[in-house]
Length: 172
Image (cartoon, rainbow, N blue to C red; front, side):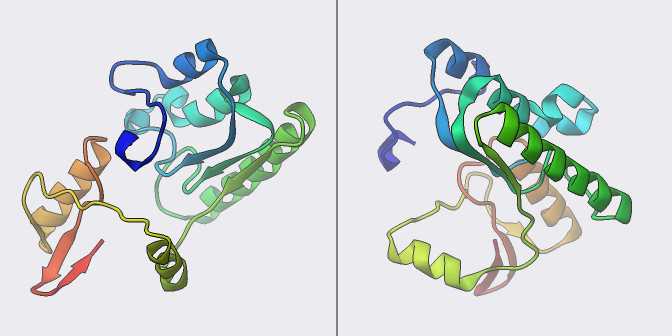
């Protein structure tokens, strides 16, 4: 992270990120949550599921700031009840953020397909994302996909985990 231009970092494996942020008096204009909750959210721990929201509410998000998550507090199939729950969550959190957090906003985005235009613009700006080859290649087999998903969800992947479909074509 430091090599990419960050001026500080917090190791989430050894520190409670929100406690460090609070103790340093830090606030952010944008908090981007690309995971949704935490890797331990699947254990049924509600505190882990909404950790980013709670950290933002507890002072990490600046007035008029934006909390952006790609999945909400939990990951799973998009059923009608889940969609209704997410709609309620988006509306209630936006109302709370606006009125109680000085005009802040909560955004939840789920991307169902790739966006080549957005990727091309990031590439043109020089943004590069490393690929994690630490455990070798994940082949497009049932076991390979399971292993790749398990590694990605472990929180230990460094960069993107790639599943190789066949020679010359990969699914990121």
